[in-house]
Image (cartoon, rainbow, N blue to C red; front, side, top):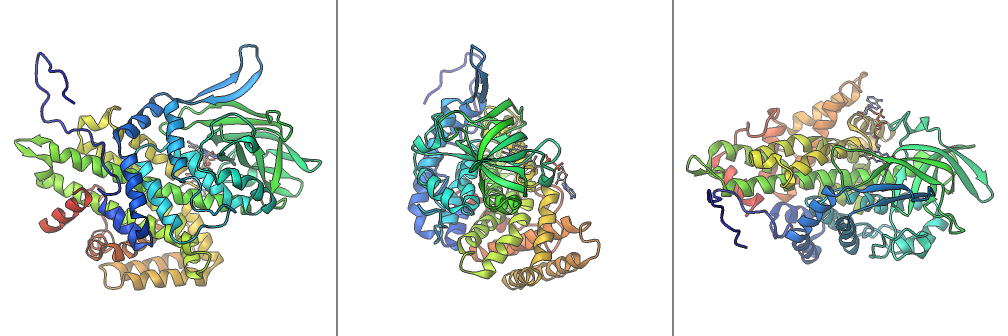
Length: 547
Ligand SMILES: Cc1cc2nc3c(=O)[nH]c(=O)nc-3n(C[C@H](O)[C@H](O)[C@H](O)COP(=O)(O)OP(=O)(O)OC[C@H]3O[C@@H](n4cnc5c(N)ncnc54)[C@H](O)[C@@H]3O)c2cc1C
């Protein structure tokens, strides 16, 4: 479209918008990682998804949903409680598009069993692409799909809700879930006095016939317009997981009272509430006292999605930076041809190569865990390590991507400012950094033989790559130290780097070698672009990152 000219000057040397692109077809790294992990047959479906989500129309929905943030309507004009959150239509459209593509349920059969084949990998590719456009709405999407793993503990309840979860319809109506065409689910664990330490939960659940009445609060409960929440509360038998619907079985609005919405750094299209339960109706999921064991089934899956989303955000940062550098000239030379910019972008491309390969490899372990003990052990040991490494890298990465666009990167019309503000949350929620490291230690302590086998497999898969033998020795030593918590960050980071090299090897052996050489054989410098790569490697990485 031709823009009207200015009277004072011409607009020159600006990059065109990076829109109306196919986020799958354009992403050789993603395509290779999906294929290497069993998802090749879904290439057409993913290309369709990538074309749709890469459109200017979807980018516009993302912008609008974040600029017009949700509003809490606590009361009506007459003082009656409403407890409704209003979202901009663009948010609902994003929800509908993700739901239509099954991002909220495609890893489950209609009966709520794991779908098998490469369902996790294929869905992850969609999640990775959707995260490049709008991440806030993915919060209820991820929680809905993850909730099924916890609901499986209570088969009679799962059998009732699964037909509504299993549809590909998005139904935003405020109505009882059993009357709706589709439903979403959230979770409430964190209280004021403790988020990591959920054992300190004070919310009480008292038996009331076949159900319970829950009284207390949650300090963070996101996506408050979900149709039901999985909530932790103290019952007589200890901390228990409950299914708390927005409407009680008699059709009345349940006593879930929102106090206010958080004013957040990022993730602004998504509402995160502070909430009180004033004797709210709920039914148990699993036995009293087994609440953590139950809800952790859900949390394992949301952690996986945190890593996928962070990898997607970094991919988007890289693509926008590279696109800009190819269109912007400085001192009569395109940025993309300036040696120092090439050094920065190629190092970032290598990071994205490894992150994408790693999250797809993780998803393969989720696909296969049911039939393969080795994959199950990989999943348990590496989910927290990968969440830790991928998510905690994202803010610094996105800052660098933003800087590649100079001042344009910092302003809100572009997507990078939003990505940057979004990026820390994936590291904070669903278990913050230290908690992830402690989780790796817990997996090691619980299943030392299985964990040793995973490490041996990683050693075999990276044999001959620079620095990997030393990394294996360091990890094994660090995890044996009596003061193991002190060295947990070092060991967990190395474990994730090793797993990344192993995941990248079947996808692109040469890049696995470069990754190991620059991240394991030597310590990576504090900034991107401070590694030694040949001119041919730089060219290869950049062409692959954005043809
Ligand atoms: C935008 C947003 C939305 C959220 N939505 C939800 C939601 O929908 N439902 C929900 O239940 N929660 C939600 N949360 C809460 C989130 O999961 C918690 O904030 C998070 O788990 C950390 O808990 P906390 O805030 O109580 O911090 P704390 O538990 O106090 O942790 C503070 C720090 O201490 C570290 N730490 C903890 N234990 C140890 C230890 N033993 N050794 C060393 N370091 C340790 C942690 O890694 C962290 O860095 C949300 C949070 C945010 C920011």
